[in-house]
Image (tube, rainbow, N blue to C red; front, side, top):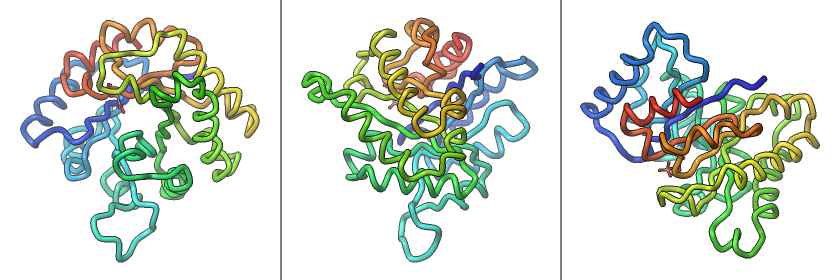
Length: 250
Ligand code: 13P
């Protein structure tokens, strides 16, 4: 049985004061409770120290939104996986569609970043997802197959159980449009079939999250699907109340 994971992706939002209020709200609710699902927040790099000091010793994990493909050296502006580990990160998002689109991250680079994250002892949350025009052209399976295929080709089969996948249809991100539970389940199931080709035992263990306008009012139905193992939450992760409602739904 896979444990569900609810991870917030704060994107480029927050401030010391706003994060403190958000994290205190989350901690206050979860303190002393046995939480059935995993809970994590993925913060902008400058706030990882704040996450570390606020969340150490709690049931909430934290992570980053990207990492450098390089180990160290003359790469101005980049943040390495080892640095993320230094600040206690458990997770790192890799290949979010906003990075693929605005920073021209190729399938190859996303695959290499996944490998780098694993080498650094981080759990990569590898994002895949089709655009609206790709869905309308009936290309969803092809696009997702290509995106996940590049990652699967790059990792060792023994490492498959160490990654998390997030299916995030690009047309559902920040738009208020959500994939129906059935639409999402279909893609999640296809992803799992693909994972089995790499390592059938590990495929049963990999958490496949859904992301794209997951909110308190649609989380329960999405999370009830057999291959939806949690959520990667954007907008709704910025309000403690909404984020916690999704955690409760899981
Ligand atoms: P929204 O929940 O704001 O649609 O964002 C989803 C997302 O991109 C999470 O990574």
